[in-house]
Length: 423
Ligand code: S3P
Image 1 (cartoon, rainbow, N blue to C red):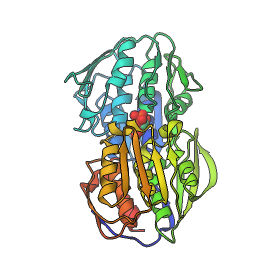
Image 2 (image 1 turned 60 degrees about the vertical axis):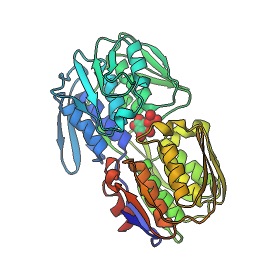
Image 3 (image 1 turned 30 degrees about the vertical axis):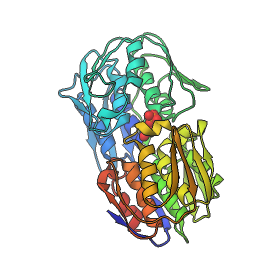
Image 4 (image 1 turned 180 degrees about the horizontal axis):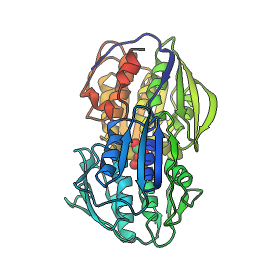
């Protein structure tokens, strides 16, 4: 896929549903009683993997153009899977479903694509084993494939060494099947969609500072879930409108949950003109329309507690920083090394290939922005967020940028190139 400088981005765009919330709606729907009706469900490859896994455990899930219906079987209604559970490229499916599988009375095997089989699973094996589940990395390398023998679990208090919503959610979901309450403390607060949705399905769950506590064996009841637009997908349009001169773009129906909206604060610090309009609630999630105008940007520091609130937006923020005047420092972002690809190394490589002045560090990078960027031929490494971030770089840089294996964007945003280019 090839990119050149584009015209100003004008008018409106409505981006697809939130990936994290779509996954969770299927999972909670499957273990609740009654029907969960999901609108604006993200039909990306990752969320379709979640649907496929629950169908293999006997859950009836109907797909219609306007909605998805999940006919739940209750907390103890899953059947032993008829086959290996294949999560594809989806870390969220792998880690969250493992929490549910740990509490079942059957054994299951879970695998995924080459990227999933390199990503760290010890971070969930450790707490699930403390709770009494038998979880084995079949290649004994701390990664998938995993064999999970579930059992009646023990409630624990878990101090997670990483601020990870996938780890936190895995432990909380296992906590539904425990003998007493389970709590998780993380170093910084990560996205809280699981907590919000578990509460709305009927779980007894409380958050105090960085600790979440859940009571076991709730009566979960199917709900209507209206999924907000994904701020992680909106991020590419925010960046494109900020970078392309003359742009004024209204991005409609974007989830602005405070545990996810770090990109807005960072862009504002960089000098971005972003207005938050029509703020409202969708179920338990805050939503707004974002009006973004082309802006002159300057460098900033991104670190600490802000990192989990924009973890998936760091690639496109690094692109923005390369176009901004002055120094941007990204710290405390070592988690980027264990995403769908090693995003730290790839960002440094790709930005350098486009002519940016960037130095990788142990846990981030330093970008001395403001040099004119030029086109380059870039591997996506089958990482959707790398492909979309450099598509944005490509429409703002001089000359032609080519992204190889660009259709990996289907993981989280089928139709991305059409929305970006054919507006
Ligand atoms: C996600 C949590 C984040 C994020 C991922 C989705 C989730 O991962 O990067 O894309 O839905 O819980 P970590 O929890 O590993 O940081």
